[in-house]
Length: 269
Image 1 (cartoon, rainbow, N blue to C red):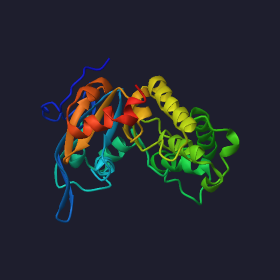
Image 2: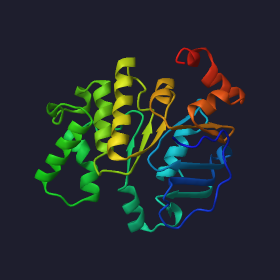
Image 3: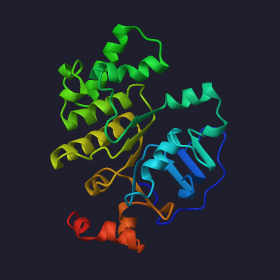
Image 4: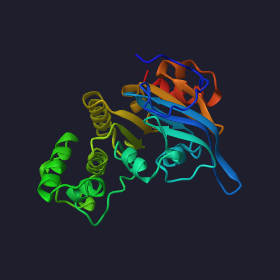
């Protein structure tokens, strides 16, 4: 069981090599758009092999932080280290090698509408690997099976899939290169309770069997209860607290208290 911590601990200096304990480290990161500061001097560590749930109020910058880590949104200050490497110091070759070790599921799936499910899964393979069409087809078939999709989904377009199938197809693409770290942005949003629970179980099983580290932005209290090892709470432009669910229920910060001990939360206890 992970050691609890109810407040963000003091952060050590970034390592230049692979960290045995932390897959992802964020130090003093500030992000803004024009004169508006979204994140300021933010620190965060994600431990190897854990499922970290990342929560916060609407508009606090949860997705902004994830996009900043991925390099899709520029930061103003600070350092981000993934697999022990400072991304701002990595050259193009090093950056590409790092990106091969992570997968991303965006909130709406972000599948290419003109490509079949199989072709979507093969996009990372075409970008990073040099494989024969036959081998890519075989690997795509394996990824479909891994996320619980039928093989006849391979040749369908995203518009022909249900919401739950789109999520699974997007996860299959995120897993295309057998990553060590997976970013999930609201993976259960838009799913009915049964579909959301099934997706939670899928994430938990994949994390356990594949040894994945999972960074999951979510509003779903059921996901936090059922699959997260630790939870990080974003507010006031920084990480307010990080720890286990039990730690969150004991925290007296007004927003955290309302979120984890409010009426809706208490129904799940």
